[in-house]
Image (cartoon, rainbow, N blue to C red; front, side, top):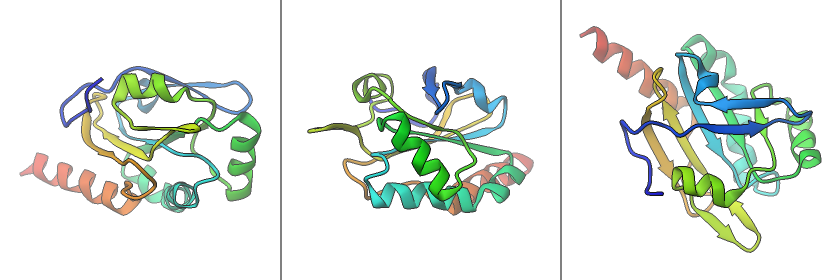
Length: 160
């Protein structure tokens, strides 16, 4: 799959949460803005810090109509521990098949072990990509303040 660009429809993905609940993206965002984060997982300090930053910004993001979901290929126990340790309240999925995600979105995958590389998408209320940020490592990630500024600018330009 080629990389997703602004205006492209985000593909339907089903993300498995600890405990077995499922989140379907982009439908889960239900007409609001969405952030989808692919992570290298709990062993990646930079990835964990990104997830923590989005948690610290949850109130501001929700107030702006932005919801977040994250996923990695970590197992359920590791993901549950991460959620508990850092008090993550947005959906964090586990057990993602890196190649399937890559085929659907263009996300980069490391080979040994197969892991998703840091990738982030901001989606509009129709489920289309506003911005995509691909990385071949842990550097180069979406940040909550950048997402908030982007959505504020979109609202301001829609009014003008």
